[in-house]
Length: 306
Image 1 (cartoon, rainbow, N blue to C red):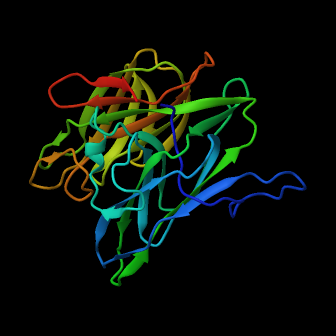
Image 2: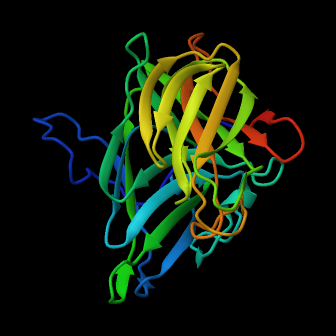
Image 3: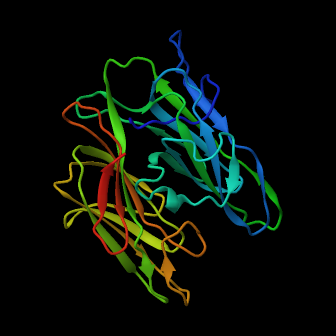
């Protein structure tokens, strides 16, 4: 299965589309999630289950997101089947469970932090446009975290759009390599506690690395063996130009001021996570497939194509 992605319905130029001066305007798809009330002091995560309505495959070259009025982070994944009926919008969905190999086999598609943001995919080493491929009727999960730091109830939602490229003559497919540590144990009172895992590096040229963790995380580091490659803040993204020799090592650092051991899980308040996503493409001009390195407790990390 190709790295499939979509995010909504409708088409037309986005709000930041430049003047076309007689040229054909780019096709843009967008969606707005349902609005939900967030109580004062409340932190909660929602998942929106949808399907792509496109009738043809398209190549994505740009993402835009709006995550305001209480939204703190957003991530979009595709799955091979409908996890829940399309249109379902529910709180407290378990993201960590989705990543267990052999279950839903999700593919990471896009992520964003609070505010307005956009991401234009760059060109590859030969000057060809990098793209993500969207197949028709793809099941998707949009996961949004909300936090209301005010003393009044608020109403929150999120919006995402993507722009597609018309010509497929000079494109290169990019896909994610997801590395997830499910074996986190942060002792009580720990400062700078490090959790490190090693994966067999997939082939391909990496052009961006992003890291994801919860509120106890201090930083995330990605190494090629023992050599530094990227250091990220939780939720951060960094452009890179590297081909990992063999050892894709990723590490998350945490502080735990509580009196309890913190384990892997989906709760921003009581649990932690360590997820690194490396975006890559093939220099051999073959289709790049998404893959997952899953690191459970007690055994070596498992790398599988999705």
